[in-house]
Image (cartoon, rainbow, N blue to C red):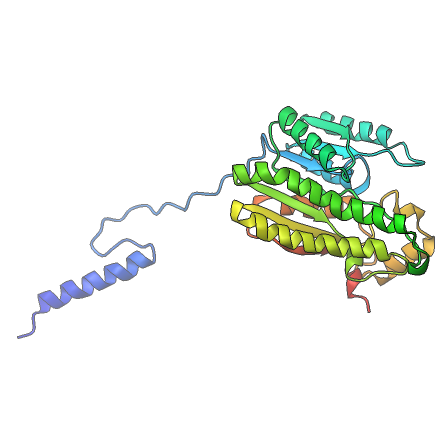
Amino acid sequence: MFNFEHRFEILTTQASWVLASRGEPAVGAPATEVRPDPQRLAETVQGRVAIVTGGATGLGRATALEFAQRGMAVAINYVDLPGRDVAAQALLTETAIRALGVPVYCARCDVRSHDAVDKFVTTVRERLGGVHYLVNNAGVTHDGALWRLEPEAWQEVLDVNVTGAFNCIQAVAQPMRAQRYGKIVNVASHQAFRPGFGIANYAASKAALIGLTKSAAVDLGPSNVNVNAVAPGFVKTDLLTKLPREVLERAEHESVLGRVAEPEDVAHVIAFLCSEAARHITGQVIVVDGGLTLAS
């Protein structure tokens, strides 16, 4: 004989399972107010420290100020360059960062020197309380047709743009691994993918930097350290003003957006890659060129 009471109990239990899986009250359970899931707290950057190499001018300066505006302590380095008063520009950048109410450290440091980089990073950790973000922005160019390129011009570009980034990554790797947290962003270039005439050394260095980015991401990923790169197109910096006007006009014409980047356009992307919003992104290259590399 069919037991209706038993059958009702089974159906009630099944309904309870279904409703529970949907987050709804079970059958027969008292009605209760459904609480929303806890909202994720805003990202905390107080006490975080960012190093931006070549941070006195141009894209480095914009990136350093972007970090400072977000409340992070910032360290920048610079080197003296022929025909440019970089020390004075570094002082202006340091003053602008300090005016934002965050700690700042600024010093001469040639990234080509392993010992100098180690000393710089050690001092940053002592004065600012640690290191959480590294932006390898320092770079140089020495353009020339391949058949006329001096060996010294080739070597200097590779030493600064690639070996310099390696030295900085190696210097921060130990503290970042120890704290199981870190974000590293390398500034490559769209010319790693689409080189123009006379930049064999520069294009090679930026392509190598992308390879270094991916390798470092593999090595440091298990320690919760993200390593990515940005590949800007032409950016409105002092260096851009030294290019022939027709080069800039061609870049604007070939860009899908019809313009070249402001330094802040790239700095915003760098800051994103250093944020928790990008915590699951590593070993990637984000091209920030206004669509320049899309041009045939």
